Length: 147
Image (cartoon, rainbow, N blue to C red):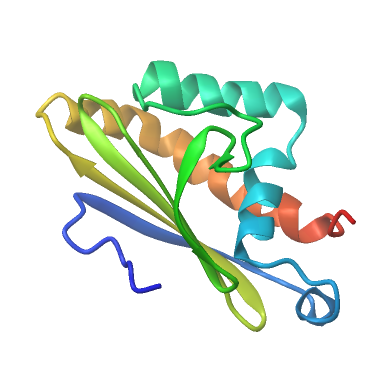
């Protein structure tokens, strides 16, 4: 999957090291990892994330429990090594790209502003985004794969 957020107004890559066991038998594929990152959090955190995406950024999300969505984000592309989630709002387009590496997972956030009002909106959300994403990644790495 060759998507790198080229042309985005904001792009940042977050990484979390995985254990050697994470690459062995029963290892998560990219979709399993992104589900662990976003859906493997406690219910209040999931509610907070969805509320921020929907009401803060205005992203159009699908059902949280749909197999074609990850916590409401539509799955735009998926293979064992990478999964891309994409959502739009009247102000911006956002993508999350999770890649599985031999000893790490990376999550790239790309945001493209479609209206001027998106820039200050994203600037307000950015500190929380930078605080939250690394924590979500570490939590997913620490949790064993569900069977």
